[in-house]
Length: 474
Image 1 (cartoon, helix red, strand yellow):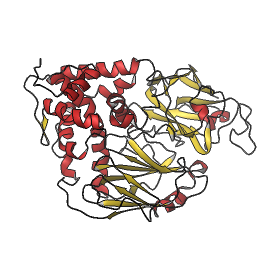
Image 2 (cartoon, rainbow, N blue to C red):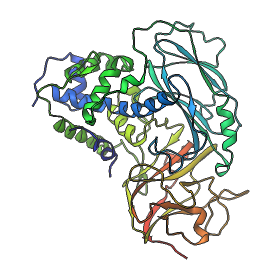
Image 3 (spheres, helix red, strand yellow):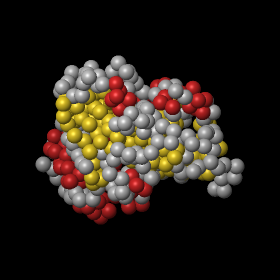
Image 4 (cartoon, one colour):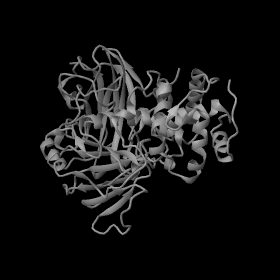
């Protein structure tokens, strides 16, 4: 299944136009959309899709800890984790729903081990990772001032390691701190989180409403309508970043029926037809040369010029595709997410996939990699050995039985086995076994490389060969 099917199969269920300004009509034409209410609706659905993911994250965070506070899990994700889709099990997460409309924030990042991977990634509601503090960026621990363009603070940032201006009044902070030693130092990671803080400072009056659970109340059960309703409600607090989009987008949203925080469907608009055009735009992007460059052996990745930043929010189609497949993606310098051409895999209980790695995936000394298993709903797969991912901390072995990451270990080819959770392989495969859904069925895997080196994207590393065959049993 192509990435656009993962996304837009969820969405949405002729047209005359009012005159548009030149920037608005030019933007619609640049996306091969008609300059009318239908084209404006298609644009608005694509544009607003990531806000549905923001809603899922922000509503949970506001309910548990409120705005402008970093809450965190005290353990890695398991098969019982259902509040997030496609979680990694390599890090412990912390999240905050930020609202800088009436205050600035002071973020405290504590010192951590020199070889500990960590990221404090800052996002607008659409998932644009506009700034990152962390080990990959060689940022220093300490205090950081977070502010909006309406801030009344001094510009010299005296007393702070840095000052970061959010492009939108509302957004998200996602903290990832690596859990080492095959998950045995969870307590150490929690000790770091106990020293993380987010504190309001420099209060001011604002004409904007505060971010609250009311923003997400009484949304339609129809995904298309709720997307447009949420786009309307958050429009004033999630404006475009660039001057060109600031000139063009409001007129397009208004033509689609979004005005003064309310969505009203134009009488002639058929949302089912609009959804078909959304899918067509997604398919055209996915299939266009260069947007998903090949890494060989069936692996590809979203062009790094879009990854995490989406060209300051102007690349709305890859932004929407990423939102549902992997919302809050990192910038390519911090993490890569190669995908197989057939993103959805399938096995019976008598079959297996073997991933043959040419060598250790290229990551920095403080980086790591993993392959994580998800069921067809995007959740971790339950299994008796509680193995949800394999990677550099999984005691994986070479065919000789030697540890791939043991003391003094050399590089070389090794294999990862994917087969039914109820069909255990021989003991020599146990550490390299990634259990698939019991009884067979569809699933996906996500290959993550955190702190990748240049070999991960310059063609010098040969990505795993994936073959399907009979299950391997004793």
